[in-house]
Image 1 (tube, each protein chain N blue to C red):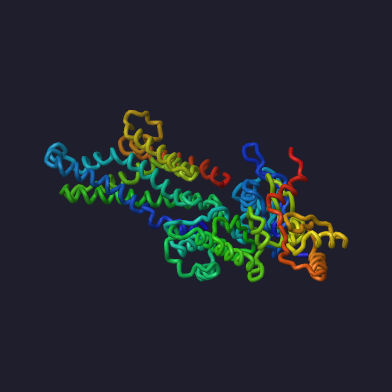
Image 2: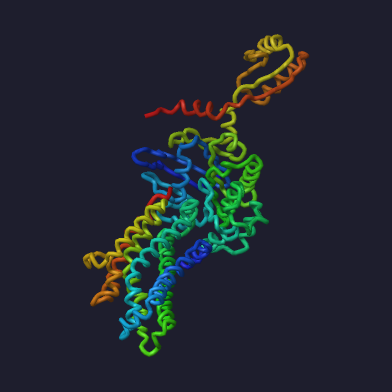
Length: 304
Length: 238
């Protein structure tokens, strides 16, 4: 079994009498990309601030690399790179100076600056003041700062927030490379299920400060998968034909709708329809939206 | 450790007007007296013929406390605002350095900048006196150094307070308005009782035991740093 990198037990954070995070038990293993999912205000950023020691928990313990955060904060933070919420930068300084300000504190070799600039592909822009950067470039500079100290754990809070599609793609590829190329464990948060799905191996869903779901992304996909829709020629005939063969479906506006099914079943269904002489125009899976999935998951949680 | 953090802070204040401000304060005071003495040169030369250097020092001494307060306020605020502006605290404090080190680094940098201002003030007074032709026979070296340093020591309690205010509240209007109010009140130092720390920079020049007020100021300033640093080390970074 791979070792545990982050483990929290009964984590609680109260803000003015309201629990922003309650009874949170996280378990993140080495080499994982852990997706932290939840709507705005669910407590993702609060949890990340707790993990970085920026705020103190009201109760519970945090262990990172097997060490207690309260007692060995400096030793832990030395191996952690982070990007919390909006990117932090010094607008009047250039990208190189921004990284240099952090490098002096981390005490890593100067060559590391051009390395991280290269990783986030900011080379060529490094001599401009950062205030003139686009949001995507600032975000990438933030990731470069997080990577500067050769971290073993990377904590990224909404790294794709406010980026255009190509920027999102770029950052996503960057994050996916981390465990493979550098052996870094990544904790990445987002409020978009589709985002997390494309990056993470494991997902934890937070709702009103509590963990409501924690499982591998494959299991999540199965749970979140919606219905299969088939657009075929002569739909009424096709429906009665497959119903005789044990499939249960309904006809909606000329589309055959079936409940969630696995790959083999889909293949068989398509095969029998083709053999029967139906033309198949479209086979699509209608995914549940995050809202729907949330309602489904959250439905099982009692509210006090 | 602290040296690394300070060298990072050193880089960050680049181009933020802090050096300009540290130079502007003493130069402003000296320029003001250059104007004063320039315009009324004949009158002053008659009135204070016995002690021209003393006249210059006394005239400038009235404005040293208010300049120190304004300087501390603005330097602390500008320095803190570099981190507040794009909420860089969350990045800085998630680095492997203790918060007390971060706090101390900011404090030391403020102290260095203000010390440079005070040294420049002494140098400026000296140059002005020589330019005005007060002669080199009776240059009161000790007094000239004293006017730069002793009110500075006595102003440390306010520096501690301003540093804490600037670092704590991201809205710099709070710390700057407070500093401005203190600066204005300090202009009426002669009407205030001597146990009010705000008056000490004035008394560190204009009293029978000026050195004591400077020492009191340094002691109280250090005492006030403790709760400030402690609060900074424990507060939640939002």
